[in-house]
Amino acid sequence: MFKFRTVISIMSLFVLMACAGSERNAPVASSMEIQAAAYVSPLPSSITLMTMVNENGDFAEHTGILINASQQVLYDPAGTFRHSTSPNARDVNYGMHPAMVEYYKSYHARRGYYVVVQEIQVSPEIAELIFQRAVAQGKTAKLRCAISASSVLNGVPMFANFPTTYFPGTIMKYFAELPNVTTSYVYEDDEGQNIDG
Image (cartoon, rainbow, N blue to C red):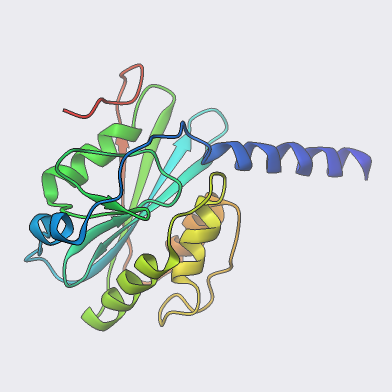
């Protein structure tokens, strides 16, 4: 029993470290900046879960949600991703056009880490509800990315059975069980995170 508790404690520590990236003092985007950057995708409404996984043990360490609603945004709770052309306000990145989405994936994929991308089409109403919930969630404290991401999804139609969890891997597992999910993987072999250009 002692060994089991020790393993659980160690696993919990890794989860708490996962979303603890370095603090970046980026200013909160203004409503004018957000409006100017807004990107409306021509593709069907969708929700895409992106999970950053440590190749050492396939341990999921961070989660973000790309939301294609009335505009396409990235909800990146407690994340460090910033780009000069993607205004960020309270953990929501705006202006997420396709090139910026690819940049986000590349920002995280590197030697030792890969990104699991799980996409599902949803109704415009569900996409908009998740978008509004992400905005309302507000800025997430370090170490709580999965709690915030799962809270945004939990209870929404199609995602009603999602648990509220500290574990990005748990969200990824439940997402995989949804019907008609398409999954892809991003691998890169660079040494570290990309730098904002």
